[in-house]
Amino acid sequence: PSFSSLRLLYPPVSPHLSPSLPTSLFLVVTSAGKGLLLLGFLYMFICSLDILSSAFQLVGGKAAGDIFTEGSVLSNPLAGLVIGVLVTLLVQSSSTSSSIVVSMVSSGLLQVQMAVPVIMGTNIGTSVTNTLVAMTQAGDRNKFRRAFAGATVHDFFNWLSVLVFLPLEVASGYMYKLTKLLVDSFNIQGNVCCTSPGNHIFVNVDLSDLAIGLILLALSLLVLCSCLILIVKLLNSMLKGQVAMVIKKVLNTDFPFPFGWVTGYIAILVGAGMTFIVQSSSVFTSAITPLVGIGVISIERAYPLSLGANIGTTTTAILAAMAAPGDTLANALQIALIHFVFNVSGIILWYPIPFTRIPIRLAKALGDITAEYRWFAGVYIISCFFLLPLFVFGLSMAGWKVLVGVGVPIVALLIIVIVVNVLQARLPRCLPAVLHSWDFLPLWAHSLEPWDRVVAVVAAKCCCCCKCCQTGPEEEEEEEKGGGGHFLEMYDNPAMMNGVDWGEKREDKEDVLKATQL
Image (tube, rainbow, N blue to C red; front, side):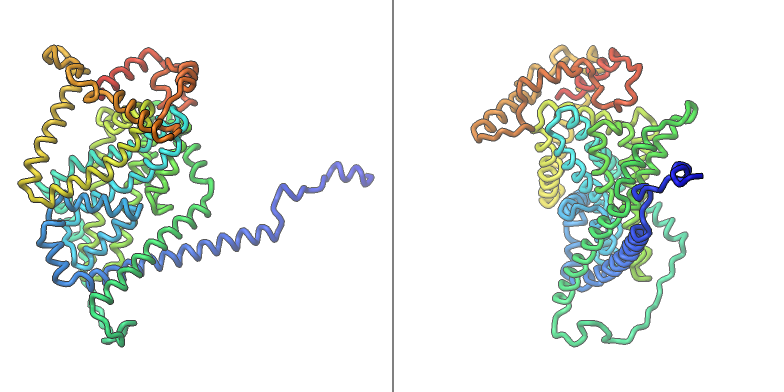
């Protein structure tokens, strides 16, 4: 055959089809280097946890021990809960805050029973990150509705779990007793470590124990936070794009008919596995939020993913407990297991039975409100994550009498309002005629419309052309043209919209709004 026929039979391989040998070697070396760096940062993270425990011992002393064990700061469960929320808000990582709590327990500065409300508060504090991420999609009303609902479903799960299990734990201590049995079954023996005296970096330094403890505390916290950030950055670069691809491929696929219910539990396992890989529930849930906003993932799928993220983030606390000394390893492991049992208990309560998936319905109702009045999203974040915790903390610090005197009437009023709302939606005939609606109240007391006008006037006077707080007539007209008759369409995956009964959707929408109109 001629040379031209050979070229036709065996065409030359394009260099774009496969990477060259130097490029392949570079990729292999880069991946190996990132893996070694990951192991190094993980080792430094564990070492920083050990130093943090020693630093708490030095800083604690008798005075701090009296404050945390005998005072009214952490001996009050509500104060401990708020401290957990605020600390997690400051460090923006439940992994870091839960590791700090475990280190305090391992150092003997904090008892296990007092650490339980703090570890519950870390769950609430970590859910603010994806809520803030949802604010970035406020430019488009429907995307914002989906994104904010997908983010706040995590908030509602954490808040409802705390409202149920914190009083139950205070009354019965079932999580403490259950984890105590588990830890005792491990038969952990304290190790006696013999070291030569004076063999440390501060042996020849004329500093007090408090000064040395503060130095070690600052350095260990710096190393701990830095290692966590670098670990997350490395894992994100190593898994770039793969997390979103796995989510799209796996979570939008249902099992055949008899096993359709298994899909949600597989999503929980996927969420736990992904969070274990990235070692941050905030990173994972924040990555899901934009996908919910654009409709790739429905809220019904994002909900089990967030539950799995809560399970995955407990591995950091268990890892931190493993760094505890032998004589306090049992206590540190117990508080880490309490974190795990708390999240599993919440899943058992709020997921298996479809009727109990209340966080989904609450998140959708809040998504409707924030889509119509987008400034309300900022009010929700400031109120739930800052003002409410500080208010509860102030009441708890004032003593039980003040807390009961102020808190009980507020809680009773909220319960009455919820019951009346449910009866208005389900059994209005059981109510007096005046309570069939909230119209007997002033308009500002049962509607956000007057407040929206106030916000619009303030924004106009301040020359703020914020698209999040104002809705032009063009946008409303475009929304009506773009399918305003499809009510719950904004919460569904667009790929699954064939054969939807929109009349039933309209009734569901009216029930949701009527039940949450106050």
